[in-house]
Image (tube, rainbow, N blue to C red; front, side, top):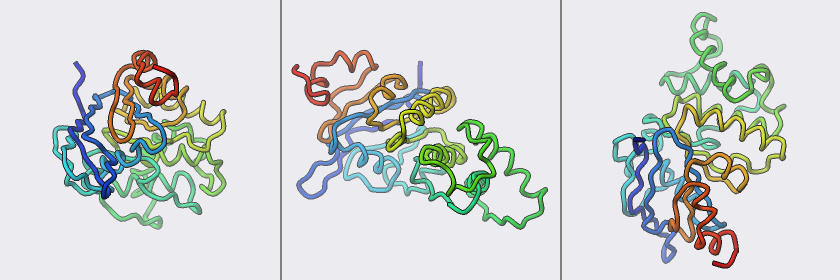
Length: 249
């Protein structure tokens, strides 16, 4: 039986009279890709920020890998292995792809980075950085300046930066936003490989990608989870079709 790596229980976040997260409960199992979908304003990004510690929840609990983390800081959650793409760090546009990943590897080890270190001291950073780039299909771009990458490649690199922190779970917030059809298809292929090695919580508007990738899906509407199930169960859920897909129940 799969272990629940992330457990969210009755999570609440209010902004004045607005209930952004409404007694939300969900679990993400170890080794699964769990997608969260919902219309604009459903509270998806608010939830991600609550999970990473960017904003603190009012009540409820968040447990990750057996630890209660609701009151932990962002850095503390990252050290436990909870990594969010696109907000882990800014990409250094005038550094190479490999240098960006080496910086992430070094930062995760807890030491400052100096490019003028002797080659034998930086060698321990290069191989894990290259392995991360191989996972994201960017090894052939290792010497390319980030500023020269396409939008899709920069998105891939941002995920690679998250992977370089050696996470137990990836939180991906709309990774395909702004991508071309070709780049989106490429990222779907990469994520299918990554899900064999990482637990992933995915927020994404591309429904084709969601239904091809997800093991389970949770549907949010006005901060509340109205359904959780396999892609087949969600497709067949009348309440979901009515509330999110715009079909009559």
